[in-house]
Length: 419
Image 1 (cartoon, rainbow, N blue to C red):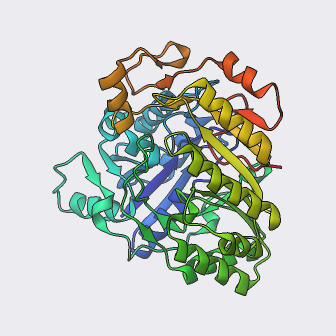
Image 2: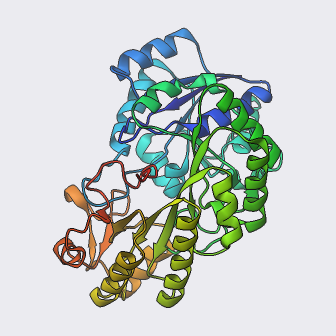
């Protein structure tokens, strides 16, 4: 079948290479389908580009990725679905094929977004297996559903490479973009505020991941971000990946997210030898404070010892948090002095998260706010807030160690590369 994959993401602070489209396109090609990609990120005239693209070829389906609903920060928030709605309306002027929606952002509120954007079918979670199912059902006239769960179709058989010529990487890199690579899918953790919570876990074949990196390095690219929920979901996998990178001696550098467990000095040392230069550590106030401090102190110590920069994303302001508690964290961060600490105390709420249900049940909407006068309907950007900005600024005393998320437009969208 003839398939069009569209990237409608035009946010450029920084621009994010649509890695998921590349993986998906490769899988579709290997399954015998024809794929064309329309990347609108740098389009100077969306309607002209859409018209030219769809007049060249008639497609059986149009797949559109919804990476993010909004920037997920309160200050200077940008809501993307309105622009995506406009782009899809333009597409429908020039093409009558079924519109299939998917992506991480889409999975946050699948039926709501499907209805808002006027899609025909939506894919929750991974798209590879689900899209093949949709194509088969369309051929046989058996599509009697609007949503399909990609997590139901397994992972072991998925491809691990991508066709680099689909996307003009250089446009992204010139605008401070960075190449991403996926090693693992899913996350078994149960963080009440996270959209990726309690998803089936699957790790890609390390040899094939190394082959993918090697191919990209040969094309001249040497700076990567590992786009897993957390790099250290499974300790043994991290160790083996680093050992393989060290063995291959690829001329590259990489950054990743990490969580506050499943680490030790040996892992940090291996990561350094494997050319990791930046760890972004996710810290929140829901865990035991003393335990948090002990673990963060160790990671910071090991990172400095092995010359890896440590950035901390600090999420606080949950129900029950107090200013003295936050001050304790601020003083602790000053003491250990990582590279940077991002402060986020407006907590993005989504309709289907346990945290949202808990807050509504125990507190109602008293502390729920929405920027730019959006309705607090949990479809538009909606946040829980306990602390006023001035209070937190007084605690930080304009210390440059701390960065308030949202005042720089490249935060919380793709990892800020510290330094």
